[in-house]
Length: 64
Image (cartoon, rainbow, N blue to C red; front, side):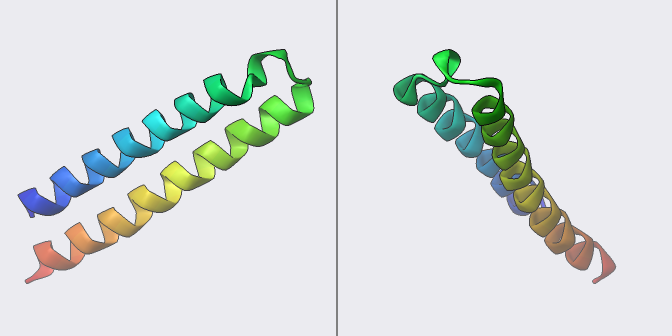
């Protein structure tokens, strides 16, 4: 279970690093509000997906 928790944390950190890197490289600070909101929504959905999948695995391990 600790391994799955570490994987969860690693995935969230990796997604955040990737998103911040893309934000900086693509220069999204200067883009319009719709692009910024769209990027933020995609970032949030990716993070949420990783968390949901990881938590499902952790719950299954706890039941055993």
